[in-house]
Structure formats: C-alpha cells, structure tokens
Image 1 (cartoon, rainbow, N blue to C red):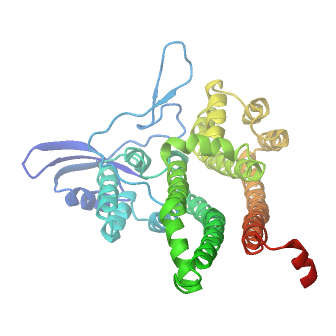
Image 2 (tube, rainbow, N blue to C red):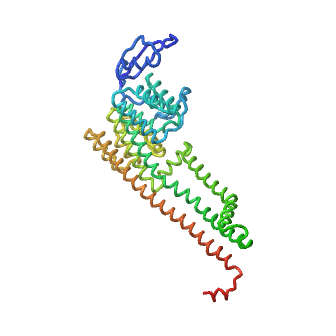
Image 3 (cartoon, rainbow, N blue to C red):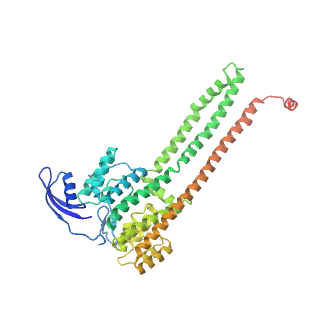
Length: 441
C-alpha cells in the first residue's frame, strides 16, 4: 500500500510530522483529518521493497544480542494500548471476515478498523479496534497494534497478519485468519456433549447413592413408627433431603465447582503451552495439530515467497504464524540456525519439522522456478489432511464419549442394584425365619 509523508498541525496548533499508509492522497487526507489534524504538506514516501530483509517491524522488532547471529523477537511495552479480554473464536471469525472483505475491496486498514469499531457493541472491544485504527492511520502496521493489546487475539494471529503485510497479501491473510478461527470454533463447539457426559457422570453416581440411602432410611423410619411417621412418599423425600443437606449436596457442589474451575484454568493463557503440548502428544489430536500447523506455515511461506522475501526472512516470518506453540518454537529454533542465501528445500530437509517428501517437492519447484506453487500445493494438501484428521478426531472422541456414558451408567446401575437387593431386601428379610422363606417358595 502506498505511503505518504505529511506535515500538519493538531488542535493545539502544535506541528506534527509522520508517515501514513493509504490507498491514495485523498484517502490519506481523510484519515489525517479524522485525527483532528490540519494538513500543511503531503507527499508520496519512497517505496520500500518488502523483500529487503531482515529487519522486522515493531513489535516484534529484531534486536541483536551478543553472540547471536539471528534476530531475536523482542516485544516492547506500549503504555497507550488498552487491555481487553480475549476474543472468542467465533468473534474473531466474524471480525476478520469483515476486515478481509473491506480491505479486499480497496478500503484502507485504518478505515476498515474504524468501521468495525463503530459497529462493535462491546465498548472495550470497540476502544481496542479504535486504537488499532488510529495507530494504523499514523503509518503503523495493524499486526503491531494488535500485538500491543495483550490477550485480545492469539499471538499466531498477529504472525499471520504480519506475514500478509510483508508478503503483500494483506486481505488474504485476514481471510485466512477468519477461516482458521472458524474451524477452531466449529471443532470446539463439537464437544458440548462432553460437558453433558461429565456433568451427568459426576451427578448421577452420588445421586444414585442419595436416592437409595434415602429409600432405605425411609423404610427404617416407617418400620419403627409402624406407619405413623407419615406416608412412605413423604418419608422418602424427607430422608433424601437430610442426606442431600449433608454430605451428598455439598459433595455434588464441590465436584461441580472443581470441574468448572478446572475447565476455567485449562482455558487460561498460562495453560496455553500445556494445551498445545498435549495437542502434539495426544493420539486423538496429534495428526490434526500437525497438519493444521503445516498448512498455515506453508501458506504463509508461499505468500512471502511470492512477495519476494528471501527464504531466510520468509521462514522466520512464517514461523510466527504457526498456531501451536510447540510447533512454533521448533520452527523458530530452525530459523535461528539459518543464514542468508540458504535454499528453502535445504532448510526443510535439515529441519526435521516437515515431512521429508515436502523438501523434494520444494526442491523441484526451486529448480523449475515454481517454488511458490510447490508451497501452495503443500499447504492445500496439508489443509485437506487437517480436515480429514478433524473428522477422525471427532469420530474417536464421540466413541470415547459414548463409552464414558456407558461406564457412568453402569456404575450408577450397579449402585442401585446393590442397595435394592443387598441393603433394602436385607432390611426387609432381617429376622425372618429361613425355614419360613423356603416354605413360601
């Protein structure tokens, strides 16, 4: 997108200078006027080749530490950025879909974020989007501003957008973020039935014990009072109420509290690494996580390669787009050992992160001048494998859920049968002459 240098004065008549990205000079004037600036001078800024490596924008910015030859990502502290709650996957899916449509239609990123801020109902989210819009209007990249909002969006989302900014496919990157978060939302919603199973599994077992103990207690009271203590139904409910007051009621509440508290902690940011590590270890999830990360990484690598970014810089930028922290760290570690001038196929072959057959495919593309097409082909294949793995994971989890439901039901049935035939009939037949029982039979 073209950049323009401007000289202006603010509402206090103080001089202001800077650089702003806009689709045209009129667009730049409109954006600056919305910030309350009076334009004195506006001129086109010199074009900067996005493929000129290897300095990254801020944040993250490249800093050189002693003894290291590879840039290290450092995130500066921004005091002006508001702190907002983490958007849900569905919210991110809808937000970035609209941003992709606006930017794809030629609207500047600043105006696109301004428009979304005006439509947002949550005032804090609206303030966050307005902050991104204002900062972007001053020439900063949206990925930088989003990264300053803390937990507003996951870090890999900023990495995907940053790849689009450097590769020149910004609208596509917003669309890909929308697609990825939409897939995550659908997969997450699929497991609603696990809540049903776990909650019922926690409730049904103590509830079965509560019911049978109340029934037995009511029988004892009825026998001792010769029926004068009330009707059998009233006695059953009174006995169950007494047991529910202590200890089964508090026990059920405690178990439910532990369940909801555990799920809440599981979804907190501090548990992100643990969740992602399990995602790469769990036999039900490893294939899905692996193919999703390869698909997005190679997609970003493809766009950066088409944009003229060197393999060295493209690898490090694409690594930040990987959704899984474990995979991202592996890719970043490979990037630290790279040097300018390396062939992409050699990087893939030596990394042991991607399947070796992908290196051969990329090498053929490099020899024939179609490396970007090879990367896009790998991304499409990995995405298809990701979709297949998602269906397989859902099927396996469904069978596991049905098995757990059957186990919980069997435990509750066993408890009921034990109390009914062992405890209750034991009380009924207690003290009865065994010879009389045989005569009855």
